[in-house]
Every structure is written in C-alpha cells, then in structure tokens.
Length: 189
Image (tube, rainbow, N blue to C red; front, side, top):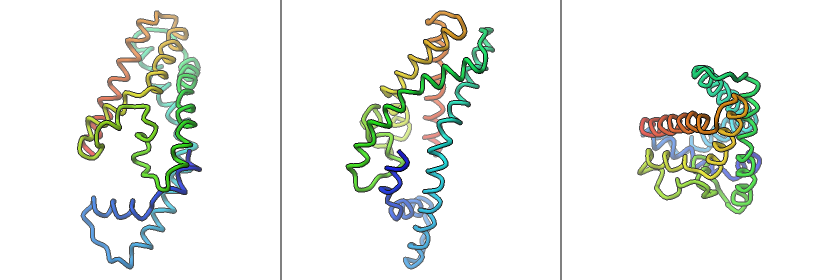
C-alpha cells in the first residue's frame, strides 16, 4: 500500500492544512521548503510504519489479549495468543489488496482519509471533520474488523480451551473498549 499511496500524496495541501490547523502564517516563499521537508519526513515515516506497524500492532494486541485471558484465569501461552492474533489479522491483507485499484485510480490521496476509500466500513456515511467521534465509531464497524473478530474468537477459544461464547464475550468486549478509546481520541484531537 505504501508504494501506491506515497506517490499520490498531495504534500503541499497537507502542509498548508497543517499550518491552517495551527493558525500559522508563513511567507509564501517558505512554503516550497516546508513542503519538501514534509515530503521527506512523511515518506520516510510511511515506509517505516508500513513495515513496522503490522508487526508491532500484532505484538501489542497479542500481549493485551494474552494478559486479559490470563487475568480471567484461562490458560493460554503468549505464542498461542500471537498465533491467533496474526492469523486473525489476515483479512486486513485482503482489504489492502482490494484498496490498491482504488488508490491507483486516484490522482491524489489524503492519507488521513484512506480508511474511507474502500467503503468496507460505515465511516464514509459521515464527514470525518464535522462529526469526528461518530466517524471514529462508524469506521470501527468494518467488514474486515468483524471478520478478524470472528477469527480471534475461534483462535482464542481453541488456544485457551474455552467455549466460543466465553471467547466472544471477551473479544467483543475488548473491541468495544478499543472503539471507545478511538472515539475519545477523536474527540480530543
């Protein structure tokens, strides 16, 4: 995805929007220098995030679920939690592959709006700038997220040797907590 998105990012528009948000005025002759700096930093960060984010996210999610399952007294090892988590995140690869043709057809891409391009979630129903909290909640209702939750339920149920109902309660409960955190962050930022 990174290879397809980076060439389509409108770095000048991103730089100008960032300046507007901070209510900064900069002489017009300094804008090209700022755009170039934003492009370099943004490109580097995008490549690092593109490679590191899936592994780091999988590790963190596996660690959280492992800790929560342990807290409830269910026996599961961290490697089992990590295995269930990484397998459950595989539908996101399909989502990324389906997004590539949409990205390729566009002349420019707003990286902050990329989550609404595929229309696999309900976030596109509201404007992300005027209803940030509602957008964050609706964006969480996603085909690939639901698919991943189902796989997490099945994987953790097998790993911890508990019922799918108990696993579902925990996984869905943790998903609700995550959605609330996303909504709170959207409200604050």
